[in-house]
Image (tube, rainbow, N blue to C red):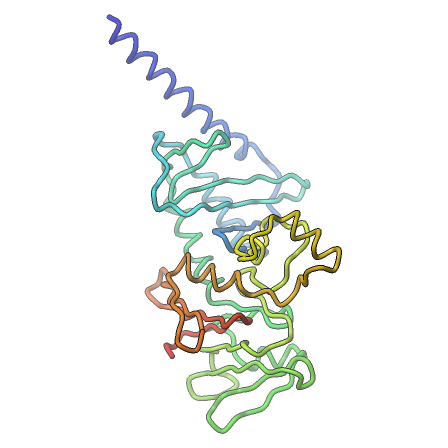
Length: 295
């Protein structure tokens, strides 16, 4: 009899926990406002501003159902998917691997989640292939050098070896771009911004400590050992530079993707994409180099 009562109590507790997790999803699904944008982070930062991707992710979230309670996945990467809505409200979901992490720190499997993971994989692939130059986004395999020329932000020089050299700061520094045949109308295969002094952003890493931004990848992956508040104080007091801080990019590539350092001190990661391709991402304590071609 005691054993039966214990089993019933355990079942009641499990049901209550599952109900709590379901309530978190239910609160999010009760939002009727239209999503205006989203962001996804796995230790880097992906802004999702286009309507099609935002709505696809929101539809996938609305299809979710709570499965069984489970243990924290040993190799699960912590991630956050956040939405903001046109009525100024917002909502966040937290994951570890493919489990939902609740506010109480419990983990649950998800049901009807195939569309969510597929949408996140496609979106993440796109951002792993995208670099912002002077605020303009360019995606390997899609964007062309002509797209950069059309912004009017940069001058360019055609090199003899087929490299197309761009300067967005009147020749003070250069960015080197390669296509298959060195033509302006071909998809970009490599962007090398190692020596760039213009604004470069890759997956939220822009070499700048943004004061007060807790999700800033440069700060999250910083190697200086300071807390966010300590670092912000040092920058505001002029005791630390908040710019040209690229060490975090190297640590992220190493910890997340197993990057290795060459004899020249260049840290390179081979990041697999969901479609089978690989993007090669490098830093030398510098802005990023990304390529669909191995060195």
